[in-house]
Length: 158
Image (cartoon, rainbow, N blue to C red; front, side, top):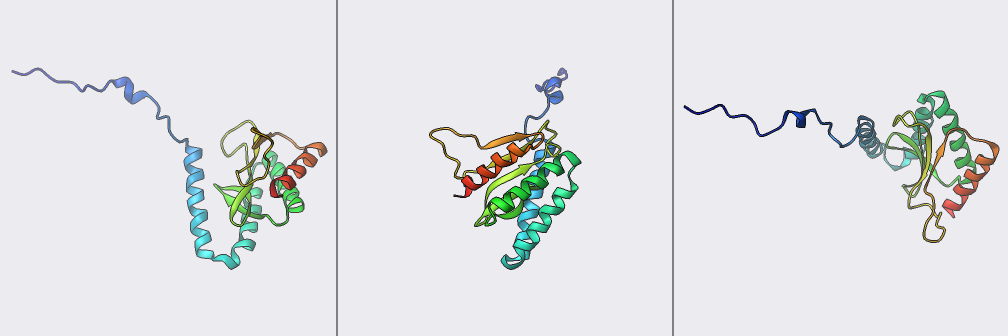
């Protein structure tokens, strides 16, 4: 008579958490897929007007602290770099040139972080030697912060 065999898999292995994408990251990827599908359906002519209204609607949905920051960032980008086109990027407001994102705003609430983020892609001309910052934590905006962001935006597009 044969003895009962048990699985080689430990019961503790099933209790371990998967160290992959968080629910928030998976949600952002789903939003990005929807954005790409919507842009393909819209076509190039309607894209700019629709994209800005989508960005403004997404900003309006944010909790107050993030919304205030996102509205100010939107105004600073629009006035400092009017050639950048607002668009949604992973469900967050972003600003692009020739379809490529230059900078973006990430709400604190979106990824359950303690601060919002203003980030710049590799399309931004912020190079300073061999190392430079590409993202900034935001908890509030003073007049000095707004001036610094305005200067960064102008530098990014030049």
